[in-house]
Image (spheres, rainbow, N blue to C red):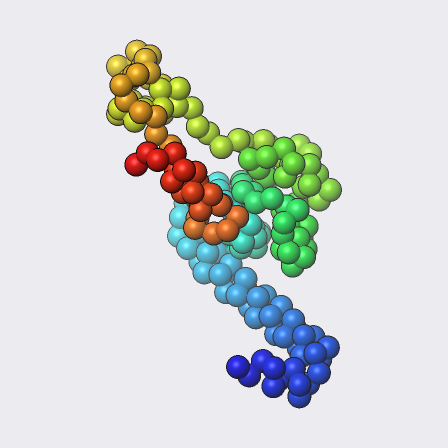
Length: 185
């Protein structure tokens, strides 16, 4: 690997300073390129509202929509306390430009109060209502298509639905391990 050689030649302080500078420059170019592409696509769409989910996409969306006269609603789906400093700076710079900022936790909203006006923040929890939980084709709201309330069925085992990226933060491995421990398939 060339990394130890570069560190030996440059010294660790110089190496890390240069790598951080290159990263930040590359990252800014990446954001500018993505925002330019999104802005171009949005110009072709006749909509007064843009909705975005997720930290990086939110920043790109807000950057792209600047000066376009569109309402922008963003949804933060991450724990702000776990963001790296670079994202925290971008949050502070761009999130205050959104017309509405939603979050699925109260703690995320509390963290954003420092840089987003309180009247622009909204709590929108993850929606899940499945009182029957048996997957018999009834809607997730516990109602049959005919509008009658569905009764839970004792003969049908409950089911679990998980939606999330396959990244450490989502802990899908913990759910799989829990299933394995139940002995059910």
